[in-house]
Image 1 (cartoon, rainbow, N blue to C red):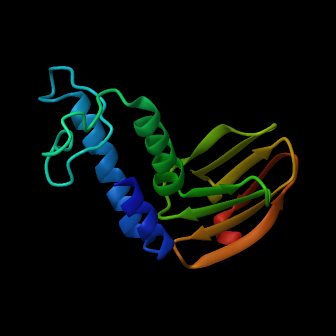
Image 2: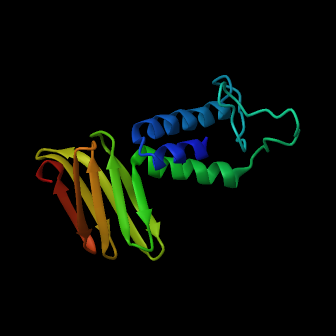
Length: 166
């Protein structure tokens, strides 16, 4: 599913990629609690058509149970990139945030090599606000609901901006 979601992203189908990510993450959670009571497990691959692990007629060892590095990395990546909407490039020192809708979301203390960043959106008395914090200079591009797009530097330290003012 991860490869399909990244393919949708490549063709800028952000809404569908986000919806598939949410469904996939719920599928993983459902596999952990099989009937809402009994404990399940994590699998290398999940069935695209029904709950539970994928099946293979030719390979009895597929999918592998508790194949954590595959499930863990894909889960974290889907959450950061497709649910929250943050795309980070360490070489370019950029953070692109595609905000799919105005809701409280973001990430705190994300480690980028030797830099911690925090980017959060929430509603204040002044309107929807984005709070940013970084130990080093980064360039931040925000794309809100596909309508507003702006790139600005995140200075080291804390800053905030109103979405309405973009």
